[in-house]
Image 1 (cartoon, each protein chain N blue to C red):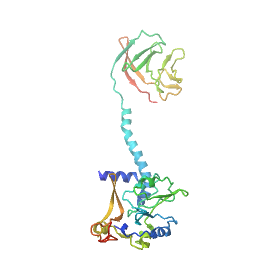
Image 2: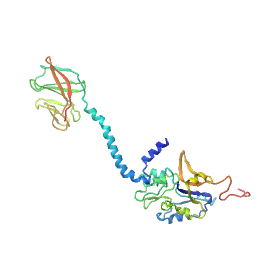
Image 3: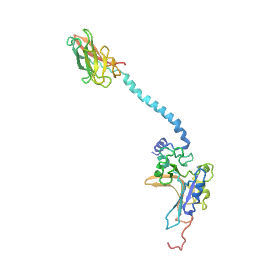
Length: 165
Length: 189
């Protein structure tokens, strides 16, 4: 206990005259570098976590192929009910599906049929409907797109692809 | 182990030579860091010189917000560094012995630094040099703390906090009365 107290004293109080320079200049540089190193190392688990792909092999029925007119959209939740997403039919053959939480501040994005763009009304963010990329506004990256598959005249959501800036 | 101050209150005659000596010491800028306290004015003429006690863990240095008070390698607590001191008086409030003084005009604290220019070369500090009755002496620390002929005290209890000091105080010898003045057999108290 006494040793711990002495150690804490030596850390806290820079009053030893013979160690003055150590703690003032070199000590400051060394502790700054050490702190940078510690912060760098402590962030690596987070980097690894963020790079790891979320394995969702969940297949979910959204709608039948004939349900939507060209230019129409329908909302659904994928992979969970609390993850709002939008299925858009952009031509006779082509469908697109995106998560609609805006990447800026998570406002819901809506599909503007006349404009042909996905629009976030909160801060005027615009997304390309072709690939979910940002056209204009404050969002830092595109919308996560949902991979679709077509079976037996039905449209199924099979996976989520995070936008790579 | 170097030498430390030894103070025997029983020998003090209150001449205040230590104060004058302290003022004359080079680097002290004619400001005395020595106290001579009258213990019980009116009742007795007893006085006690009080320099810095040079604590092992000095509260003044640890309370200093700018760490102006430094401790030398041999454990003496120096006066505040002129460049660093801001005159905040934290040390005065923190010191359990009430030693540090503050010059309000210069905004600077000053306290006994053991005449470090002298004592680091082995010369006794000014107060010990000028004391006519050997109340203040500059003696070997180990010898004094372990083999003193008189009872000494260098650990102090302040409400549970034990403070060890380098300055050693000689306690009045009330058992054998071999030191200092004492009342004779026939004195009615």
